[in-house]
Length: 113
Image (cartoon, one colour):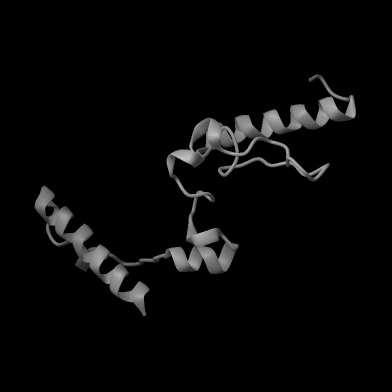
């Protein structure tokens, strides 16, 4: 399918980049290789469009434009992770998790928020 051609083309370009960088043809030295395509991410993890970071990355989905920790219409539904503020990357996701915990604690009147 379309993924096979895309993977083959991308792999060839990566191997050629290694060769241009002076590492030779490294493809012959690879003992194990696993490729995860956007379609596999979508099918395995139910990610919209196969996006590994959840939401797309147009300007409307960056930084403060991402959804906050609380669903605007459904009580008791909270978000944390790459698709909500503050965004993707382990440090930001952990900060977002802490912020979401603070919101929940404040709403429940518990914790140190």
